[in-house]
Image (cartoon, rainbow, N blue to C red):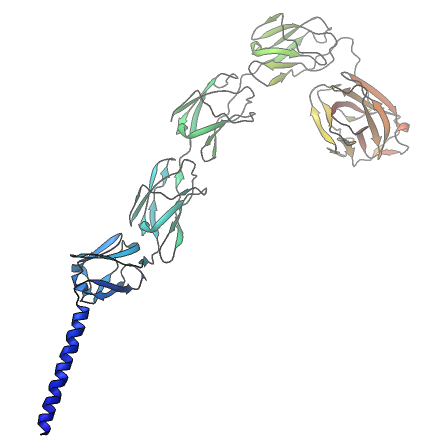
Length: 512
């Protein structure tokens, strides 16, 4: 009886279990391949990840972004699970499971934790050329930054071990910085330097060269030059007669002075020539007669005088018509009203001028004043033993070469306004005795007629002088009118009314 009941219960349980299993099998084995999840969604190449779902045994290939894994190299595969090793070339993106009945794409992106490394780079390249960067995980690189901050984010070619990028036209020599993505985005800098090619000059011809004539520059990579800087020229030259990799032909600007030239690349880097470019200029070796009477002929001897377009005598308009002119000699008529001073030559096709080394003396002109104790005579004299300052309200040039009253230099004073005193001497202690007279010669520049300046000693500036335009005027001032002290500690020549806008020249300064 007991055994009969046990057999009946066992049969019932078996029947129920069979029905339940059959129902589960019918639910899970619908025949449709399903991807329910995978993970981890962030991993490193070489890690094993798991795919979970239904009917995964039908998957023949799993495609990652940048790489794929076929079923024959799966770590394992069952109806519900697949384990695969993440390929080295994998990049961030969606994963696709391939079956004979269709493809299944993940709803979540797969990301990879990588660290880009660099083993080598091209060492030398011209702007616009391609360079090759070798290393690992270069397929994750998003941008390459060159030394001067120029960024390249499009590449000629990109793979896991190699990156080919074009050097920007304005790139500079330096290391490269690569920015890469992945779970842990970061940057890596090259240890080696990319040397960006620059233009190089090997020869200049002709040298010396005349202004506004063609100069031929020979060298290498000269097609990379975008500008040329000439000594003395404010603006760069950007237009050339012709240009190639080995030669540039350019017209020499009129203000060019002797000196090295610079070629400027698109990056702004300046390459200076090793040799100086000299310019052909006239020179004066002699003036005859000297002294000379106004309105008589003068013979100027020198070199390259055929380039002279005018001669300017002190205190006279420029002379542009000559009696005769050759490369070694000019004969011209000296204008009326000229003063003692150097002559100035204007140069053909140039903004430069050339002065004679000697002063042209004028017959019958008043000689410079006699000074027993000079304070300024081409320079501040050592017996003054003080300091010179620019002062305020203008500028000064202590070594001006024209006009001059004596010697070869004068002190040029530009008054800008505000009761300025650009001429200052101070910090000394000069004993006045036995001198009684303070002497100063002043040449009034254009527009100075009737204007005034104050002469000051030892902090006082109450002695007023009315300027004479266009000529040297010698002033002899009683020291007692300037100071009652026994020593002179400072001297100023101060603007009288604060309006400014004029220039004077001071010379022959001292005591008698």
